[in-house]
Amino acid sequence: MVSDASKTKAAQKKAAAAAKRGGKAAAAAAKKASTSSKAADKVANGIADLQISDRTCTGVLCSHPLSRDIRIESLSVTFHGHDLIVDSELELNYGRRYGLLGLNGCGKSTLLTAIGCRELPIPDHMDIYHLSREIEASDMSALEAVISCDEERLQLEKEAEELAAQDDGGGESLERIYERLDALDAATAEKRAAEILHGLGFDKQMQAKKTRDFSGGWRMRIALARALFMNPTVLLLDEPTNHLGILSDLKRDPLGCGCCHGQISSSLDTIVDLEACVWLEENLKKFERILVVISHSQDFLNGVCTNIIHMQNKKLKLYTGNYDQYVQTRSELEENQMKQYKWEQEQIASMKEYIARFGHGSAKLARQAQSKEKTLAKMERGGLAEKVVRDKVLVFRFTDVGKLPPPVLQFVEVSFGYTPDNLIYKNIDFGVDLDSRIALVGPNGAGKSTLLKLMTGELMPSDGMVRRHNHLRIAQYHQHLAEKLDMEMSALQYMIKEYPGNEEERMRAAVGKFGLSGKAQVMPMKNLSDGQRSRVIFAWLAFRQPQMLLLDEPTNHLDIETIDSLAEALNEWDGGMVLVSHDFRLINQVAHEIWVCANQSVTRWEGDIMEFKQHLKAKAGLSD
Image (tube, rainbow, N blue to C red; front, side, top):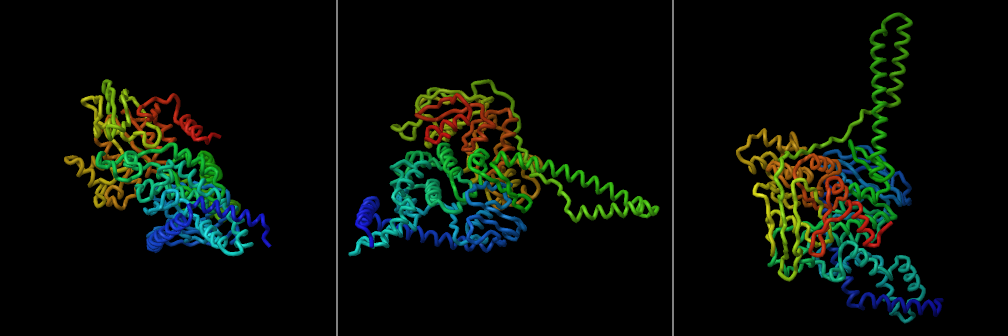
């Protein structure tokens, strides 16, 4: 028998839920949204099924089927007939956060997709969310799109509404449903979803807008918000901070409604949202289930990860600790392995020489030779240390360009806005010289990429003047340069076409300066990885011998080792640099000054980038 108090509580919860959802109309909208989402999932899953045929995955689940931990042995993954992982082991323990590392092209994303598609033996009771695509464009608001992914809660609320409408008020069944809703924290679902969206850069107005009114970059953020809101048992993220660098058509037309596009340049910038990156890092470091993340940001991996999985030589090796701890542990292990290998090889060579010299000598020497043969056989049976195979280190090189007398690039009382009544910058004054190493930071939409375009002359000031030295050569790197590559051409053919009159050997050397050699230079660029195509772009830019580099998100498709090579090349180069990046570590490696773009101005931050990061954390209420 349900008590009167329980009935009263149930009635109150029903009323609150109805008010929260906005009545039947909102419930119908949520149902429509869920149906639309399922239709999109069906199409996407059909595509995934086609891609599965390109992958072959085998493995044996060795953990208990009801365990919250996953341990798979004899794991092998083949993609297009190419072995990515051979007879290895994957261990994912509940409550741990794993960073998946490896060189570009080793198969990290393929492994993540295989896990997400359950091509590996993962227990059915463990729900998995793999963030692989943006949310579908629909009439749902951003907030509804996040809340609608919680299908169990929506179904329970629907059942509760139906039971409450019955003559007996739903009885014990309704009470059990409300107990489950309490466990799901359903009463705060909308609040939690709004907080997640706010952390990822959505204000209240944007949260209420329809998803079809957002560009793909913002819909990817909504998909990321859904992943965090669902709180799955296994969460798989592939370069999540890349989703926080989005096209700046949103900066001038934030909601993607198209009402401003007639007034702006057709070219696209990239917004780097460092605040959202900091918020995401702080949020993920509190994730208490199983997280597997691929990231090129060492700072992000240090902040989030409790373990590192390293993909190398078709094996998975597990390390305890964050990225810095992994580097230290790996270095120590490889040093010990190298010493052991060297000692064993010296012993083997010595024993083999003795056996060859005295194996057929006197009885005494022959017995000693036989003893050494047995010792050698025992060593081989016990397993010898393998030779340490280090990751191939790419070396980037920019040609030194000498000096130009300052001022090289000067802004004098510059104002700029895409519309006269909405200025991004107002009366800014500064100078950039060839010894400048500047990182631009600031809130979403503050105009960092716009400032780079003012430097190149692609945009002209609304007022004031930008003075450039007559002999200054500027080169700008941005993600959209990849769209200009002819994918049917090889890197070598592309360079010869772009710089006619140069010998093939000179073009080979130019591409080789950025880590592309041999077959990679002559195969069609459609067969290159995104990271390799980025290197082609760097080679193309560097051949112009610029005296100033403007780098807009240069690391998005580069692995950690390649980013370090880029940083080293920039530090050895004698030109000027202005950088926009969400990679705190790269900024820390190469920038001497931090300039904050905000409130229509550009001001110098008195401190380094890590102090600025702490400032962002404190500003967002995320301080340790």
